[in-house]
Image 1: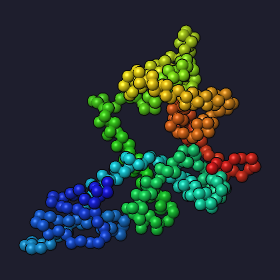
Image 2 (image 1 turned 45 degrees about the vertical axis):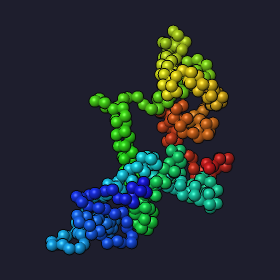
Image 3 (image 1 turned 180 degrees about the vertical axis):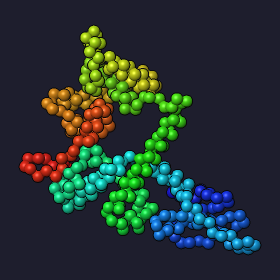
Image 4 (image 1 turned 45 degrees about the horizontal axis):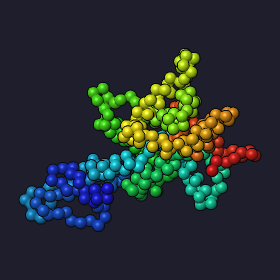
Length: 339
């Protein structure tokens, strides 16, 4: 990416050679047919590119030309960074996520003991959700981009304006990520009727179902209980089994064999994961035995691993977990502050 930035591959006009350099002005080249474009920052904050006429012998005067469209090279760099590093952030949650991020930094510096202590004097933190805590790292790239492109503006504006800039950028990055996903998904799997309807999360659950069944020798009913797969009452009364779990196991097994190459390697895979999978399944049984167990208990027992929560919890419960308040800002005795 650094090489792409240095060489300046963009050509926003016939025969135009662009440069990314913003300091140490160098005279435009004097080779026949070549011209140069350089960035200029306007008072309203916009950046435009100015194309100057060639130096040297000329018969006709050529006026400067201004291009308002950003360089394709810059767009390529931003798009690549976004696809590789960015995660979608809900713009509406940016103010809360920023406060959590700042509070965690204060805690690391010793300026505060825990999030609950900070929230006692910060009403914004009292509305924080579990998903906001996970999103703190997702603001690293948006902030870095703003500091790189709009350093003076971003560092000198008010806190309210800084939050507004981040909200807009997070919204644009979210749209870009969604568009990039759609393009890639269509190129890899699309057809005349669009994309297949299979969802990645359901495929993951099918694979876990197969591993539970084949590695731990669970019944289909037990697999269904572990992954909260609904029972078909009539089928269960007739066969004593979970029909949907049977289908998921079969599909997951087929996919895993395809991934691993053959059934022999699949058997080796089952042998390798059996101890860890058995411990994991034991945790699930502890959760089921706890009264009033819910998503937060899942998180505690599974060490806050969102990928496991995504597989274990039905979508409704997963959304409820992500929307669950952190409960910050409580000062009553006996409550454990969130760290």
